[in-house]
Length: 245
Image (cartoon, rainbow, N blue to C red; front, side, top):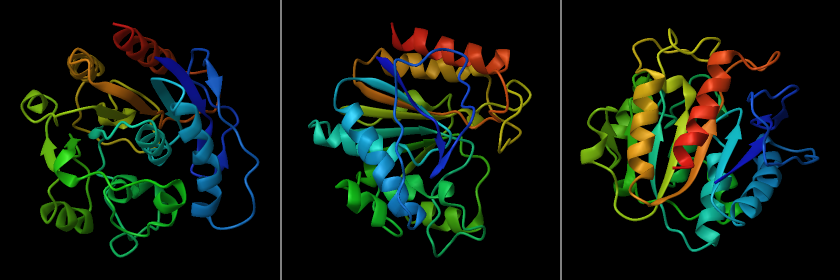
């Protein structure tokens, strides 16, 4: 797999965007005026095209980039299930969010819930909820909890994941805030009570060993103010090593 950098948080360019390792390629775009969804559609169209070139680790500053990755995989004929590691559910819609934060909506959008302006612009078909596993989402809001309870999305701990992995090809999404902030500093949205970096990497390794992982999304949701902290750099390097087999 190659490392594709998307140095954005939603439709905002990040300067700097520090992963601590060099990327093989970078996706950038001059985004037009308009709504955030319209602007992100331009950016994620390029992500979808880049993913179609081959297996990739797509690193960005938030989780919505996953919609471009999924669209690219579908265009390449890969109808993937989703394993979503995240301290947060990202399952809000316009009707449930209290903050209006668009980065809290991508998993809901991926399964066809909420304002589908962006998925439709990308030609993204909804992923069946029965083929989605949400891992260690321990910081959720009441609206998300109700939506999840009425959905077919499977919720799992990292430890219990081997028993609930979807069949077929997989998109693995890793928001680094799934890790306990005691082991990964300077996170944008820390949520105490998470697992260790080693536990997450072991879970990803087990998924890779199935031979069914089509792409990995890395939401590098830490503060990118300077050179990547050693813990951030080591996580990215160790993840790439896992994916290299």
